[in-house]
Length: 140
Image 1 (cartoon, rainbow, N blue to C red):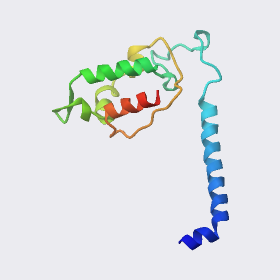
Image 2 (cartoon, rainbow, N blue to C red):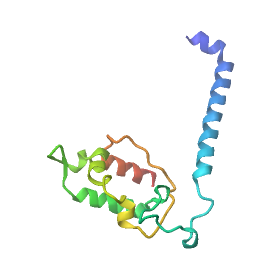
Image 3 (tube, helix red, strand yellow):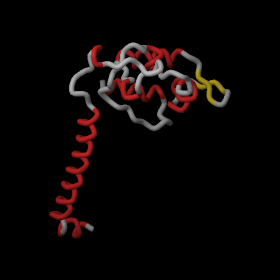
């Protein structure tokens, strides 16, 4: 195996660089296409449709996320009819409790202000809520 890597090192490096380049370009293209050129101002914000904010404009501020964490931490959580501790509540639990409502969390706390998010948070639904908020704080 070591001999294979040493004899084909140049080809492996070329392949790795081509793959890295393509992945970087794809990510860059997606970010450039979705990131606003400037922050929206009140004059270029369209009013909510049917009382709803377009999904892509439901970005929360860091302060709103921190407030959300405190709110979620203070409530009683249940799963399958049994009480669970905050440390074990995950995104599935959040989904069952909040994502079935007619309004998103953003719409409940800040319906008047549309905001395109700077970051997309993508985690498995099995992630506990405390772990999610620790990750957000780490990146903040």
